[in-house]
Image (tube, rainbow, N blue to C red):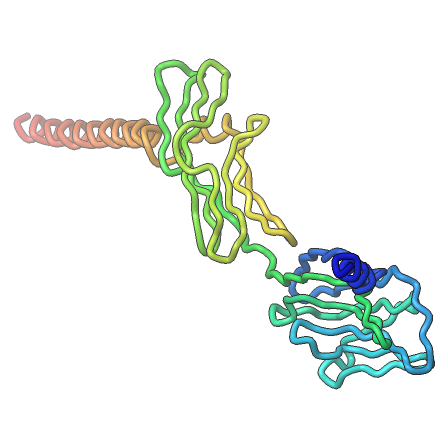
Length: 256
């Protein structure tokens, strides 16, 4: 008999209308809509209460009025739908669990949100560290760095006979701020991507463009240096020859 009593108590103690936790990511400075979808009719002694992560009341709805906490004055906007509300201008300190409860002789949870407030990700930079080109014009090796404010990843890409591949290095990593920083090859583009749950930013270059650049440090820079050296040497030879010729002509004039 006691087993049936326990089962009956468990069924009766369930909170009808309660819902699973909703995970939400919000960009810092943006607003958050906290929604109650369960219809509730309030009696004279009943209320609906939104609590923050410290289990302190944000706002309490009564039958004919509502009471907003002083800590949230000016930050709450009401939608007029059930007991939903919008929390404005979220900051990192606002991260946490928010719950809506129907308070009566028996409490009932109406909604629960697990909120994480994040900064937007920082800009990224895609830089070519080294480049090597074989005797074939269709072959090229690139070692690149994808960097953000607090992290970077390196990777090597190869073009061989018009076929592109990604070889050594780290394809991605999680930054100290919790964002994802990755570098990869897609549709002939080397893409440097920085993203979290609320924002993303990227930089990209075509692999053909990078392979054809002459000003990239590496083996391509040697050929540019060689050209400059040859031009300078030829200029010096011409100048020396001209000086010697003028000197010889002056000497011949003196002898005559």
